[in-house]
Image (cartoon, rainbow, N blue to C red; front, side, top):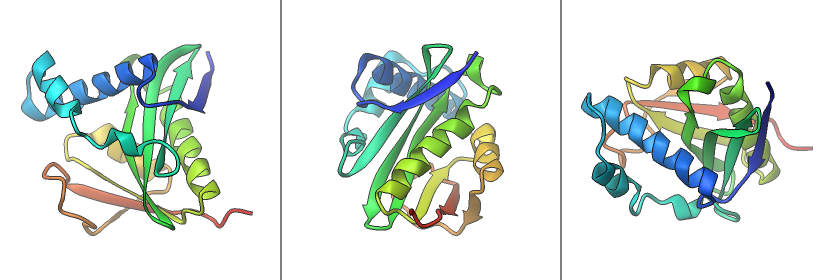
Length: 163
């Protein structure tokens, strides 16, 4: 079983399903009950996903043994800064190394674009995500925005200068 991670449009069939699954999981965890189809649709409406394409960002899809199993997005917020978003690994593929490969792919793309600092926000209940970020060199930092009412933890990682 192997992973591949490649850039892909956020609206490709596989990417669209991964984004739905991501939102379903984060909304369901937050509310403590399964999210409805209508709630998922509402959450995906006007969510800024159009920024996940060059030159404003990037979206990657991870495939485990050939099947779409993970995704992550990157949005440029300044010439040398980007935010990581929509990091998701389907439950059946967790613990297989896909999360680290997603981060490496996004960080590589960020470095190629001249980004030196990658930031993100997350919630208390997304324990696995917080562990993944810490394991891969992200450190918890003071809040760098207040635009997301759900953000409870903020992380950042400095990237080495690209050669």
